[in-house]
Length: 203
Image (tube, rainbow, N blue to C red; front, side, top):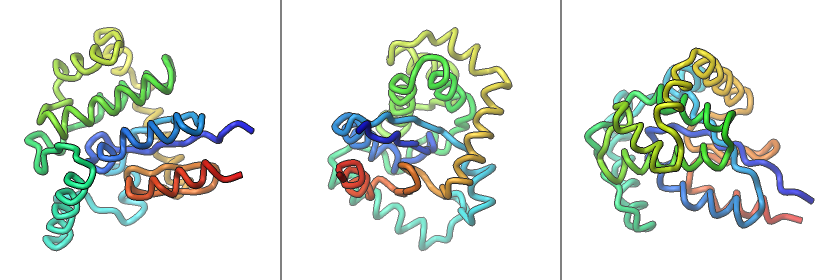
């Protein structure tokens, strides 16, 4: 029996998405599951409907605990993230639309590769994927045509698709990033990836 798809709801600003990036790719590959990436609008669509709060608006206690957890996971996974990257949060609109256009026109694997390259640039390289020149370089590095993709991604079609993806995420029960949705099961957070693997391994 073919493995079910993994609908992978992310924010391109999320350190947690970055910390789980290599592992979700490996899990999907191990189980022969298609990984479909959806860079949705948490700030504008999902948080207002689900009670979420952007990081700068959270209480000091929650912000301090988030930072402690980032330190712990950075050490545990040995991933050299910047705890307070210079360009966080960046305007991910164009980058997200590039990922969506890639998903729909080129393929899921290339879209995942681009999303993960953008996250690495922000969290490990202290770069700004919100700048077109930086974004173009990242697109080229994953083997895509930067000029063509950015021109395509600027079209209103992809903004509408992102909104539709965000509404679909809400309907599925998604409220945070990363969320991995398999059939009717939601797994929120890179610290739930063991459960994703167990779900895919079931008979």
